Image (cartoon, rainbow, N blue to C red; front, side, top):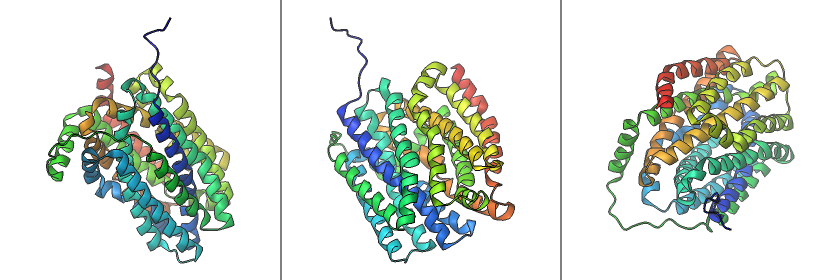
Length: 401
């Protein structure tokens, strides 16, 4: 006899999106490992290395709001395809310039800004499209799967492969990333398009203002957005000179650096696999508070790591708890925000949450230059602790409600 309470399953459309995410993440992981290695071949000045990272994230501050308005008024899957097609072109240019030895910090910064601009459009559209193809009860599970495959590619498989390819030829990891974008575009082309009603959209700045007002009136999401901004600022403050800490202070070579990133990714992978169970057992906001508290401790410890083993273990713990609180907050937005507003509210949330990353990168470079390569992580950990204490009353009240 058939049961009426059969658990709903993720759709075939979702799994095509999952495969596109996975393929692209492997290429991006190779790119993420190769860019700092390429920057270090040009300069050893942490301030200049941090400029490349700052340029990558600057579009979140400058372009997130108009990108969110575009996501709510155009086909989201089509926007994702176009963004990745442009990314394939940009990374292909980097590969050619690197092959001929014509790359420098200014060129890396400009192309990284272009890639970041495309990422803003793609990421906003990808988060907004998920509730269109996944039932609300499955959002934690779907986000967990997305986070898992992203972690496997971006942190586990891609970095050691990118580091290895970099030692063979400087241009190879960038060529691989360009190919991954092309394959991802082909898979995205098979997704069903969202049916848009023929309505008259308000002017884009009016639409942006609607998103700003919606988030400003929601106390919990507003607080989480500000808290995310402080945390990503601190994350980049510590992380921007990780390549220098690993290669200069702890004397890792390029393949060793890739393996360090892959080892750290094990924590993120486990977080993606079991976060849904943890959230179901503990509740969303208790899991969030636990993750944020653990991140404070691990960030202080990373800067004090006496060897690579301790550093890798602490990075793995950081990856686990970061994945956990990311899944909680993404799923909350997808459940709470109306679909027709999701692109704009997401864009405001992520502008507040990611807009300070460029400043964190620059601050990390300055702290490392002034106080040494170990200093940025403890400084970032202390700042994260202060921010958590300041927002604790709102989070605790939300848990009680």
